[in-house]
Amino acid sequence: MRILQVITSLHTGGAEKLVVDITRMLRTRGHVVDVVVFDGTNTPFMQRLRETQCKVYNLSTGGSVYSFSYIPKLRKIMKDYDIVHSHNTSPQFFVALANLACNKVIVTTEHNTTNRRRNNPVWKPIDKWMYNRYRKIICISDQAEENLKNYIGNYYDSITTIYNGVDVAAFYQAKPLENVKPNKFIVVMVAAFRKQKDQKTLIDAMSLLPQDEYELWLVGQGDCFEEVRHYAQSKGMQQRVKFWGNRTDVANVLHTADVVCMSSHYEGLSLSNIEGMSSGRPFIASDVDGLREVTKGYGVLFPHEDAEALAAIIQKLHDDKAYYDEVAEKCHQRAMMFDIEKMVDGYEAVYQELMHSK
Image 1: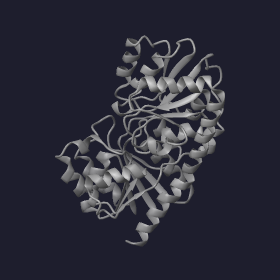
Image 2: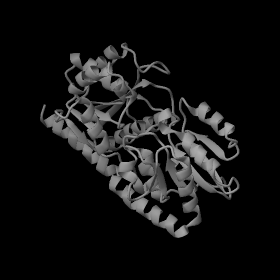
Image 3: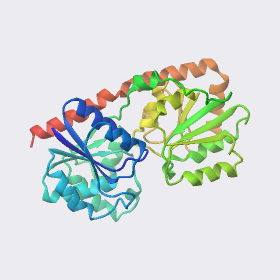
Image 4: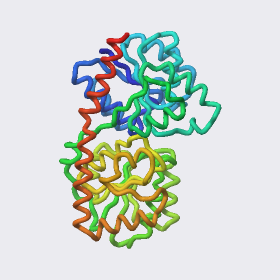
């Protein structure tokens, strides 16, 4: 099959990592898989993608992700592929528009349980039209599927769920970074710096713990990076919070830390969630859509935006070795249910089904 993945950019994020991983693995299975990015800014994910030897079509560099100039460009590229698979809201919209003149088999993945557009009633009829253009809508969690059906209506029989997956063995067997760990209990969060991710609650929680025993590592980049950095300074935490930026060795960073945490307001099915659980470390998450589904009963949930409750959980994991080991083991067992091979099998099966039903 000739498959085209279309995504906004290859900055840090779960959708971006999924596109890189699925492109690499489907190509090893003999498929032609290439990628369109609206913003072709060079990033670590872009470098990893180019290592697969796939074609990368850059529609702009650093420009707006909403530009009607993308439609004729997409039409020209899409005509050479059997399947066109969009990710994130602007590619979903523009691929649907471009396909009016192409009549290709188009698929999309819904990577979150919600988005800002769903709060604006103007978008609802547009979104209903858009989703109806797709032969298959893939959600990355049961909660994401339920929320999407509530938004656009239950009558869409093209909606299905394929759980995100990661290379569990690679994360579990990773080596710690050398010569970087202080003699402190390290809590790490790997996430883009966006409002959704709420690094501030985690900073607040860390500020409640003894400063000579705990340190916070934040991995990622994004629009809110400077805002969060200034927030840490305003809380007197500049010496206790380490900002790592984007990393290509996330597995090694996770193995160097003691606990992995995500304090997001909402998620789809977070790859960082599964990666954290794969690392052999206890995983803590806010009790919200997308994180609850994977973490409950295995890792530890804390009430949304409750810094005091989060601090108490971190301290218990620090103080109680038996509890620490129990949570870490349960997290690893849970991660095994989301191995990357299962995810790729699911996507390949969808593509094959659609090709046979053309």
